[in-house]
Image 1: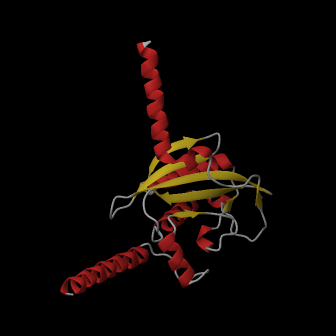
Image 2: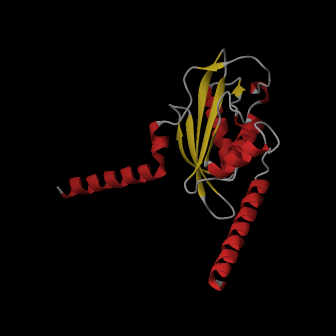
Image 3: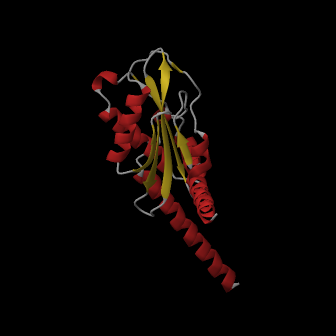
Length: 208
């Protein structure tokens, strides 16, 4: 009986510490918890989702795509410079698809999150930025990926030419549906495996 009582106390203590750390992390991410879609929905999302991405009609205002009066090539370059200014590791820039890939290492535990950024041409004019941030480990990110998106969005806004900033209510649309490309969906591990496979093929060709 004493053993069961002691085990329950340990479980309660661990759960209490875990809940405290989770709450502290969410607070440290400075998320707009009282904004739509509401405190409860946000808390459940941050506890059960390890991805955040921008869309035109996101229920989370900070995750709505922003249109700039600038061509995709310029917006992509601004996004790259913004990522570098945030201290992120930019791993790839593709001028053909106007996309950027970066890795963010969290300060507290050293976890790595992958960020995919792409500028899409918009109608009637300009371009909009799609941002997809995902954690490599864990079920819930406690809002960390949303914070990555918010940080990049703000950095891009600050670095973009003032004449390119659009803050009106004009309706707009994209030339194509935003989302991850095949390489981004496969993730960094797939890239490493492909590189290792190519190295192996080169070694075999050298031996032959």
